[in-house]
Amino acid sequence: MHASPQLSNRWFDYSVRVQPRHTDYAGIVWHGSYLEWMEAARIDTFRSVGLEYAALVQMGCDLPVIDVSLRYQKAIPMGEEVIVKSRISKREKVRLHWDQDIFCINDEKPCLLGHVTLVPVNSENGRILRKPPKTLQDAIDHIMN
Amino acid sequence: MHASPQLSNRWFDYSVRVQPRHTDYAGIVWHGSYLEWMEAARIDTFRSVGLEYAALVQMGCDLPVIDVSLRYQKAIPMGEEVIVKSRISKREKVRLHWDQDIFCINDEKPCLLGHVTLVPVNSENGRILRKPPKTLQDAIDHIMN
Amino acid sequence: MHASPQLSNRWFDYSVRVQPRHTDYAGIVWHGSYLEWMEAARIDTFRSVGLEYAALVQMGCDLPVIDVSLRYQKAIPMGEEVIVKSRISKREKVRLHWDQDIFCINDEKPCLLGHVTLVPVNSENGRILRKPPKTLQDAIDHIMN
Amino acid sequence: MHASPQLSNRWFDYSVRVQPRHTDYAGIVWHGSYLEWMEAARIDTFRSVGLEYAALVQMGCDLPVIDVSLRYQKAIPMGEEVIVKSRISKREKVRLHWDQDIFCINDEKPCLLGHVTLVPVNSENGRILRKPPKTLQDAIDHIMN
Image 1: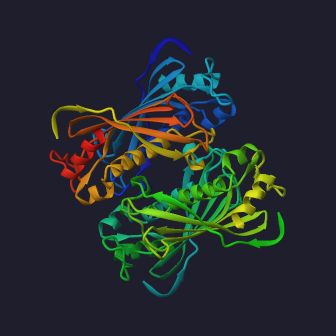
Image 2: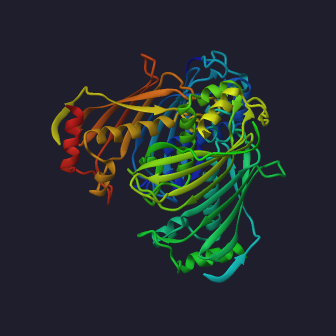
Image 3: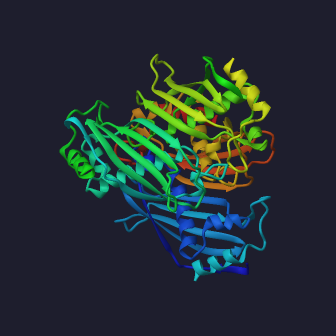
């Protein structure tokens, strides 16, 4: 994609309702449930700029997660409405660095601070795609600008 | 609630987007994922008539599933938009019988036919509540009429 | 496989420990978690007679679930050790009817009564396989006898 | 617990079989499934030194995850047998720092490098427990020595 890292500060919102299934015995969201919401938010961000993730996969390009970091700031109870705020903060060669912060709808401080790194791979053999499909590159440009 | 079974034919729609996480190695929705969607659809139906499920639980009333039956008619791929159509088909004493059929958005035939039975219990001791909270009874009346 | 239904009464045990993730806000196993355990128990049953499910899939044969019925008899708390008891109760043409009952380790009565129907399909096109691989037929014979 | 950080290099093994449910459309383990295995491995480590996690919770002490970091090194296919290797690498006041690395059974290099931080809290109000139950402190001593 680009030789020097490209940075962005444009955020996208994705809304989730906390279901019983997201919670555990402690009555709050189980710590792994957030990864589901973050994935759905990334895919929705791509959709909002015109790229269907399933279509990308059908072109032979996959976008696996290679790195995750999550800092849990506040527990979330069942029934709450939460917003996943997502941006591609940095594109470094083909690596996409996402910030994904999760807020309860009436809170100013985030409940979770997340960072996820993705890399495009050939769906057939799992190798990194140095030249990802143009449709993906265009979608990333839209998301970052 | 009522002495003789009460029947209804009023359906509620709930929309779901198929995420990677819902699928398995076969590239289609894993057979257990549907139960998540069906739960979210029931809770959304209660919300649409003004009852927050979390509020009901805080009143000391829970609505566990006591019976499930699922007939899988057609596999659903990633990215698809599906509609969960739900109704409380029958109220028999305190038992709630739900029909929940799942459709891909452009299909006329359902991908899954589901039936779920719920019963109100005391959240403290798990015993069946012969007299559920009035707010629940009112919500059920709204859903069925 | 066989023209008239073949019946069996041979059970296989599979052990599961209830994890926090299996539970929900009510402090007991979420109603959908059982389907995970039942799938793992079926695959373990095939493994115990020498058939790796992943190997079957690589041969081009998949075994999707086409019907599920679950009756929840007793809630299970976190930390409990449970046994999934599984048998292929009936083989009807290519359809496999499984009984899968789940017990807490010190109980005589089941916590859940499950029935699941599977059918072999061609993994490429999803069509029912009238002639499943011999390795599958042999494994089923082992399980039922 | 201790004024200066306490370090350890003692590892515990926990074995997992990759089920269909752990995989996604790409035919490999979905990136969030690892958190389930890591939780089960930590609980099993406590059990191996005599502490049932459910008993700890009943004493009013919970151990939520406050920080997660995961580096995905190699994709894992269905059917694989994996080992989760876990240690409490460091105890810093009441914070427990776990290393959890996941290996396919015949590999020398890890498929995933994980770090998880836990902190004991009062299950009633979610506040950090400066004085966790002695049974937890003893279990941690066993795990680290």
